[in-house]
Image 1: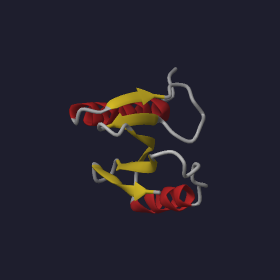
Image 2: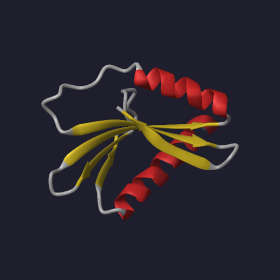
Image 3: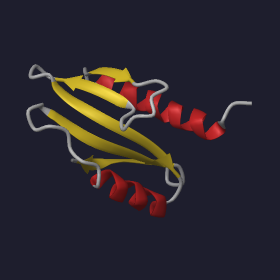
Length: 102
């Protein structure tokens, strides 16, 4: 039997990919990865790279916990033009928070 939490999270990853593609970006999903990021997005003529972690939660307290953990993540080398982002989906309010960028 499939893991419902995994399927829910995967569905939010695909929704996020479509959101970025609709804006004209190139997006890759790191399927099966247990790394720090779920999506890699390349945008614009300067080819800025965005490493995005998707978290689908229920409730504001869990959202705050994920933000704190994400902000403690060490940044990548400064020689690369990139952003590290955390996108949080709150299943209770059906809203996205895409404001957490390192």
